[in-house]
Length: 71
Image 1 (tube, rainbow, N blue to C red):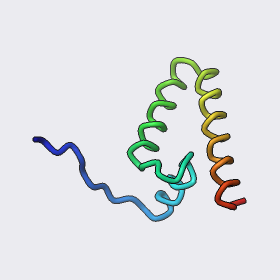
Image 2: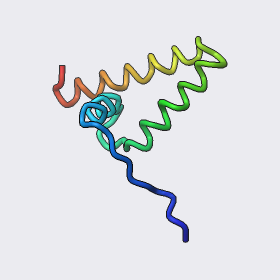
Image 3: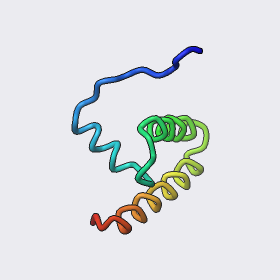
Image 4: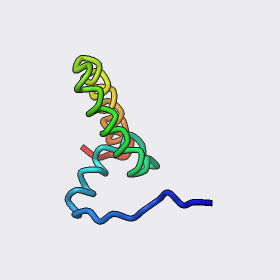
């Protein structure tokens, strides 16, 4: 069985920025990066749809922050 995972090095600040994009606590960096890439691809084709997705993500982040007490 082939292992399709790899390790990448990122700056601590970049990790902190990725952490802030989590919509829920167990969301992986793989999921966050895929979400970012998905949104970037949508922006090219349909900026209005991308904005709706970004609004949904923002609401998810705010719900998470409210739940864990981060303001």
